[in-house]
Image (cartoon, rainbow, N blue to C red):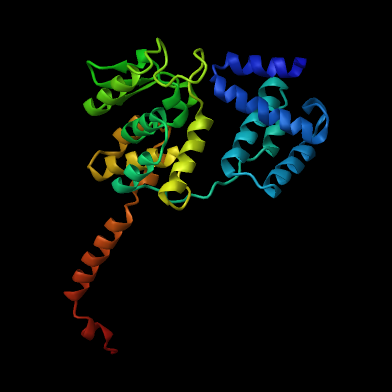
Length: 288
C-alpha cells in the first residue's frame, strides 16, 4: 500500500466513513491512477477532466460517475489539500426517472423464482421494510427489537442510524429463517461462518429471478424498496414519515415517489374523462 493510499484511507476513517464507502472510494481512485499510470499527486485538473470524459465514453452510470467525483473531491480536497482543484470537479446531472415499482402479483412471482430460501427471506425483508440491499445483508440479531416491533439500521447510508417499523408477520418469517442456522450475529450469514451474505450475490439472484418471472424492464432489490415506498404513500402515510423510514437525507428524494402506478393513472384518466362529459364542449368550440 502506498503512503498516499494509506493516508487517504485514514482520512476517510477519521471522518467516520463506512467500510463500504471507503472500499468504493479507494477503488475509484485506484482506477483513476491506473488509467494514467501515475500517482494522483502528479495529475492535474486537465487530467481529471479527461478521465471524466473517459467515464462518459465507456459509459458508466451517473451513480458511478458521481461516486468517482466524490472520491476524487475527497482525495484532492482533504488528503492532498488542493482546494482549488474542487472547482474543476463537478458532479454529473443525473436524469430523474420515475422509479420502477411492482404490483403485488409481480412481487410474488419474483420471490417464487428465487431458488434459495435465504434469498427469498432477504428480498421479502426489503419489500416489507424498504431497506437498502447493503442494509439488509448487514442485519444482525441485535438489530431486531421484537418487543417494540422495530429494526435498527445501525449503519445506514452516510453512517446514520434509524429505526424502521417491523411487521409481526415479517418478524415471524425472520425468526423461522434464523432457526435454520442460528448464527450468533448475522440474520443472513454467508457461506463462510465469519461472513455475512454479500450484496452482489443477492443482486445476481434477483436479476435471474426477474428474468425467470418475465419481469421487464430491469428489476433489482432497489425496485422492492421503491415498491415499499409507493405502497406507503398510497396507504396515506405522509412524505416526512416515509423520508425518515427510508433514510433519505433530503425530502426532494422522497418526492420521487409521488408518482402513482399505471392502474391508478388509468383510473385518474377515466375520472378526467367523466369530468369532461360534464362540460359544454360544443359551446366551447364555437368561435366568436
